[in-house]
Length: 398
Image 1 (tube, one colour):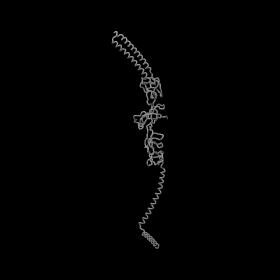
Image 2 (tube, one colour):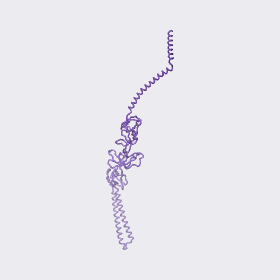
Image 3 (cartoon, rainbow, N blue to C red):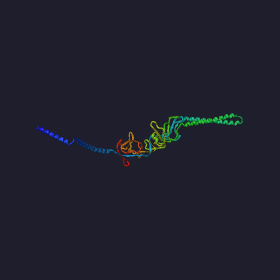
């Protein structure tokens, strides 16, 4: 019982103390103090978090900045260079003359020339059997002699009649008849002579001769072969030995060249180049290949063989275009391209078309205006939209 009373009294004392405290401090004030402490603690924790992560972010930014590559660039501008057009084509005789039999034909007795020989105009290339024609000429020569004899007899009869006409033994009509006979006999002489000349000309046409001076390119006849008038080509001659290159050009390139422009031709398998000039430009474009032909005249040289393949560099006049070193130009299956640096210092792929290769660089015919910042080196290690630190190659300034 006493213990119970003591416990009750203690509890009552504690309750009294709490009541006394509560009576001294209002309830609203105590709650504000608690919440303020909580808020202060939260703010301190946020500040600590931001401090720790801000330092880590700065370190990562510094690390990323250290990984951005420094690339040198150039602004190519525009340079004046002698424009050229590259082309390929086939070598041929500029004027290839096919030669065949123009006479009655016959058996070929001898062939007098070989491919590679030079011939003159009218030179005999092959001899055709003319034994029949010789006999025809001999027969006609006899006809000429017979006609001449008849003409002399007719003239003698007329002369005697003229001596008797004044005596009245020969009438005027007889004189006219004898004169007509004499004239007819003379005409027969001329006919016989003309026939003989015809036979001789036909015999001369049996032989196959060169129509003009030039180089024999082809021989397609052998001794013992029988040829006829209008037969296939027996010889082919390059007139004056002149050659040409039939250069195939695209429509764009064909429009850039002119007649008279110089060209350098290099046959396949040869290190030597030959100077020629464009003498004709095709007036039409092939609808299938979309190409035209520029014919380049070349002087004779043993290295220029008709039918061979050759490349050519054609002069197309002065060109004003950007020029870049080879290190700035990349190539892949999509073609040639360069990397340009945009205003945000990121690289972007720019397709280009290259032209003449000179000692100063490669001409860019399409794709650049000349004012771009073009990556000079290390383009193969970059990808589109990569950030870079640009550094100008000429003065080191970004």
